[in-house]
Structure formats: C-alpha cells, structure tokens
Image 1 (spheres, rainbow, N blue to C red):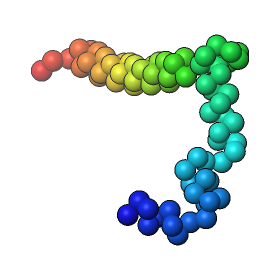
Image 2: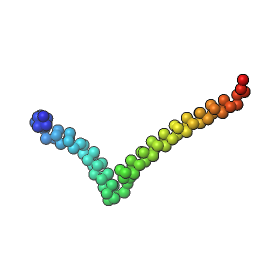
Image 3: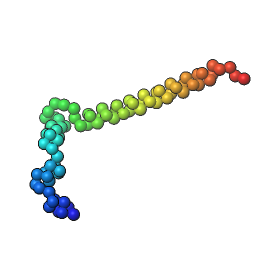
Image 4: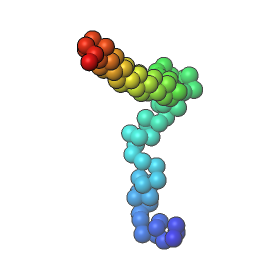
Length: 83
C-alpha cells in the first residue's frame, strides 16, 4: 500500500506532503538553532513551561473563584437568624 500511494504522486507532491512547506522547514531549522543555543530566542522547553504555567494559573484562578463563592455562601448562612 505504501508503494501504491507514492506511484500516484509526482516527485513534487511527495516532497510537499512528506516534508511540508518551505516556511515550515525554515521555522523548524530556526527553532532547532534556538534550542541548540546558536540563536537567541525562546527554547521549546521554555515555551512548554510557559504554557504549563499559564494552564496552572488559569486552573488556580477558577478554583479561587469557586472558593470565594462558597465562602460568601457560607458566610451568608451564618448571618441568617436560626429558627
């Protein structure tokens, strides 16, 4: 099946489907240079860490909002006169 797939495509089609666009390759080379320290910029690991921290921050904000709402609810319950 693998050979059949390639027999129906031209060399240009195969190159573009396997490798990607020229811009994509250029971006990957630049990122590899940044990761190797040959070029200034944000490394892949740093980007992943920033994404992880942003997700964690958003989760903590949601938890904080829930806790504030619960706190307000229970504070209101304590202020009501008991029967």
